[in-house]
Image 1 (cartoon, one colour):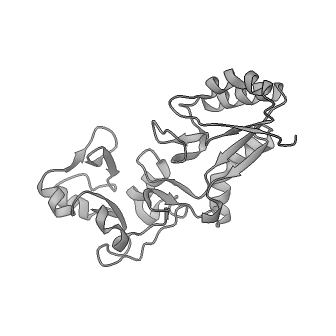
Image 2 (cartoon, rainbow, N blue to C red; image 1 turned 180 degrees about the vertical axis):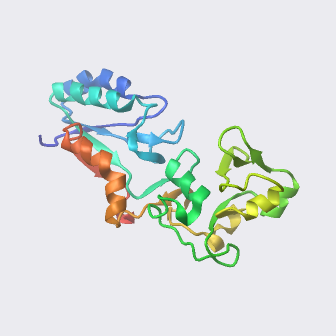
Image 3 (cartoon, helix red, strand yellow; image 1 turned 90 degrees about the horizontal axis):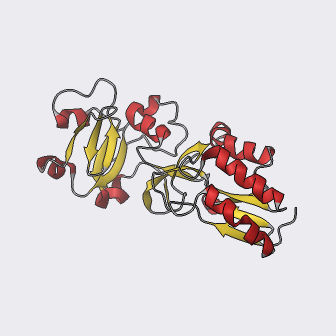
Length: 248
C-alpha cells in the first residue's frame, strides 16, 4: 500500500480510538491513504500528546486499549487505508506511573530495569556514588524539609510525597525520621535549579521528566519494541514514524 496522503490524528482526552474510527469514512472520501497516529502506548494519566510513555508494552487503556486500536485498524483497512504509528523509543516518562522507573528508584542498581535507562551511578559533588539525582524540588532539600513540603505517604505503596509527586521508599526504610529515611534511598531529591550540576541521567532535550532509554542495547531494544513489532507483524500497523531519531 503506497503512502499517498496522510491525516494525522492526535490522541488524548479529546480523541480516542473510537472517535477516530468515526471519522475514517470521511477521511477516505478525501482521498487519505494512511492514518498517521500519535503515540498509542500507555502514557501519563491525562497526557495530551502521548510522548510521555510510561509503559511501552501496553496500548493506552484511556484511548481504548488494544481492542480499540485493532477495531480502528479494521475500519481503516476496510476503507483501504493504512495506519502509521508514531513510536517513542528515545525516552520514557520519569514518572510514578512508569513501573520500570518506579522500580529503579525503589531498588537502585538491583532493579531488573536499571539497564533500560541511560543512568550515571558514579555520583558527583552533591550525590554519592550509587545514587541518582532527581532535580524536582523548588528549593534545596533542607529548606523543603523545614517547611514540611515532603512527607511520608502510605496511601498505597510506601512513598514520599512532594506536592503532586510521589517517590518510592526502598524496602525496609519506611520507618523513623523523615530525613534519615531520605538518606537511605537510591536517589537524592535536589532543587531543579541545580540540575545542570547534579544530573545523573540523560534526558529528552532539556526535559527532566523524560529519561533516556538505552535502545542501543539489544536486550533493551527487544524489551521496549516487542509490542511495536508485534503490531507490525500482525498487520495492525502498516508503517512507523520514529520520534526524535537524531536522539537515538
